Length: 239
Image 1: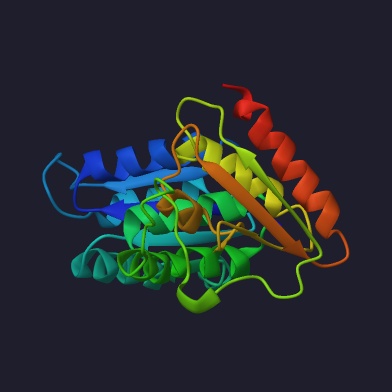
Image 2: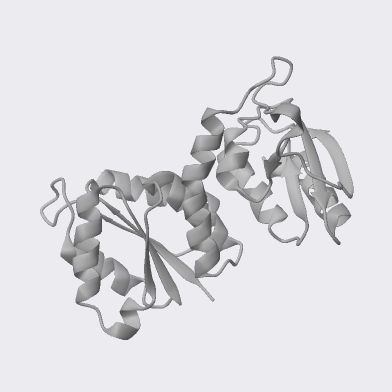
């Protein structure tokens, strides 16, 4: 099943920019921007939202992300005018528009169904809250270390530590590649204590070039997952 994403913002620039950012990490996902009023002003457009849903007619499900309250109201109005069959395929998320869109797009890129895409978007707020309370040890730039071992993987079946060699470190596109690779495996994977399948969690580590990346996994294909991720890091993500 395929999932498309509609970004609804009061600003055309925000909607378009958010779509462009997400496309850098999820090139195969259908993303549509519906920002601003019909005359180019600040606000939302019933017609633009309806047209955006129509543009995504070829996908199985559509996930909509909005920026402010009235964007949700305009979206709800647009949904009221859809045929029941079409409306059943449209799902509105209350996740933060930028973080939620990026997380949702990566989940869709990895083949997630609409439930997985909505869950990824919803995780954005939780990931942001976790970042605000994370500690950063002085000897590990950008790293996080859970207190008293909290959040550490249990019964680790495979692990390794590698060094980031690419110039941008584990940011943006490299982070998306890392998450997409981790998502191919059933194993539960953590990198420096963070869920390796959470894009925002990985990006929040802010690991620069030269930082150590500790990959741990549990599950039947744990070793395969660790090996694949380690090779990805050693390759420099193709940069």
